[in-house]
Image (cartoon, rainbow, N blue to C red):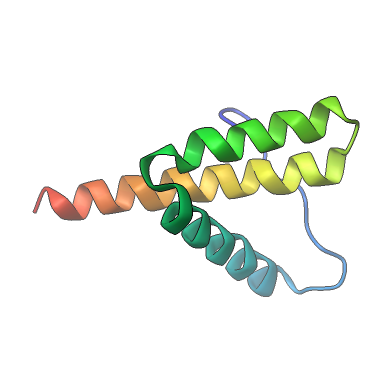
Length: 80
């Protein structure tokens, strides 16, 4: 979520594979929800936090962040 650090890393995956996993998930979420993807990811993150699922919350916070970066990059490309 905005202002949160992305500290969750999977113990089973090297950093670069985990980052690719998050970016892929963000891309799929954008394909599914379009312009509503960031809001939906934020909602999932908050629901997991409320349920005490801190790892899930951290993961969805990273997916949210990736969605915002991908959306910003797409907006920048459309301006050129």
